[in-house]
Amino acid sequence: MKRKNYFLLFMVVLVYFFIFAPLILIALTSFTTESYISFPPVGFSLKWYENVFSNQTFIDAFQLSFLISTAATVIALLVGIPGAYALSRYNFKGKKLIKDLFFSPNMVPQVVCGFALFTFIIVRLRLSVRVALLVGLAISVVTYAFRIVGASIESLDYAIEEAGMSLGASRLTVFFKIVLPNISSGIVSAFLLAFINAFNNVPLTIFLSGPGVTTLPVAMMSYIEYNYDPTVSALSVLLMIMSFAIMLVTEKLVKVGK
Amino acid sequence: MKKKSHWLLLLPGLLLILLFLVLPILRIVVPTFFGDGGLTLKGYTDFLGDSFYQKIFLRTIRVALVTSLICVVLALPVAFYISRMKSSRKGIMIALATFPLLTNTVVRAFAWIAILGREGILNNLLMKLGLVEEPLKLLYTEGAIVVGSVYLFLPIMLTSLVGVMENISDETLEAAQSLGANRFVSFLKVVVPLSMPGVIVGSVLVFAGTASAYSTPLMLGGNKNMMMSTLIYQQAMLLDNWTRASVIATVMIVTSYLVVGALNTIADKLGEKSA
Image 1 (spheres, chains in turn green, brown):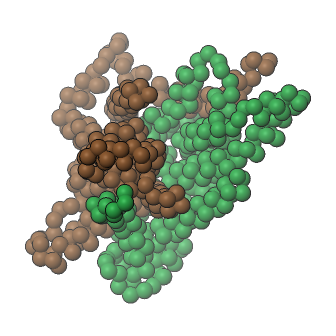
Image 2 (cartoon, chains in turn yellow, cyan):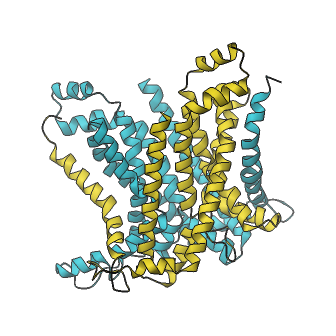
Image 3 (cartoon, each protein chain N blue to C red):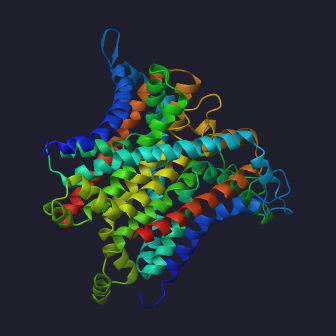
């Protein structure tokens, strides 16, 4: 690789252009004065941003998505961390089967999961849509907890735990005083990925909506069906800023953890 | 007590998955095999025998395959380039590539509506350049679904490939070139085979993701280009045909396990060979 390889460089530029052009386009069109998506955008206005904040459906959907995704992520971690610990620190019969079972949410298409939960939780158990959303999203992101936290536990030397226990600490104390602080950066990364995926989920949540209970991406999709104006562009930009902020905060936390 | 404590740790996860994933799925899958007072495959022969549904099934497989293939072809050279960078720059390139993953799929499909639409950016450009006289029909086609899906999953393929390519040492490449292979040949004969585990992991993710994505086929494919995911929603929620939706669900699960299983078997074989 001493000489520059122009073909590779060309491919890199092409692919990064392909990745960024659509997002930049959305960002630019959010400031247009015209009431449709056009390029290059005409004029400059913030009216589409005002539109987002005066749209009660979007506000409600954002609140619902934010709260349910946070709760679902917390559940996924509470369930996933002990599970990941057991899978990496214990040897027992049927371990392979349990492992496959824990990773099965990745194998089942999410639309199938959504349909199955709709018929079970909402129709059969007659529980509310919110409960179905909470459970469904927790399942859809629990593999992040297993995988990422599991990897951090695996990379932690078991000898440290043994040392703690041989000095008389109980397994529980060792877990909270030694293991948990050492895997905190893994937990933060898992939280971030799980939250963003829960927040952005469409295939599952499309099946789990009811009167007044719609997640943000689903609300955006039905808005686009009837209105093709830059309001969605403006909302997209706001969401990109939010995701970016969460990413920066996580990066900081992970660095502090290390 | 000490011996059994791992089950206590596994219990919450097991309960969540058994109660709210395995049980609900069994509740829809099992009844599809019963009917007319006995075991039957009628739901499946009806579904797969109907040319309308056949087309949708085949389209889903085709779109997922083509998308995976395009992702591999685009990502191989780019991931190779990134994998040879200094680690600080590498981090930036990967962060940039994965940035779109932070936005939801509706936003990303929306961008492609603006680009591919009848009065979209691409058609405007082509008309201005005088390359076409009438706007081309780009949106609401199978091609649009493929473009939108590549857009969704290319970052995932890139990160899977960079992961394995980092482990290819510079010495290996130099050795290939000092033996007379030119760079293109050494890329094809050395880099690509060594990257196969990443190609397979990436392909599993891209294939499964494309085959089960909902918003992209709906927004870019329109009513005429349904895929299995939009079909199951239509049958279950708009037509209230839960029996058919359950059959579709089962077909989707089986397809997912077959494809992923096949690719994983190939990956294991490759792993044995290189090990």
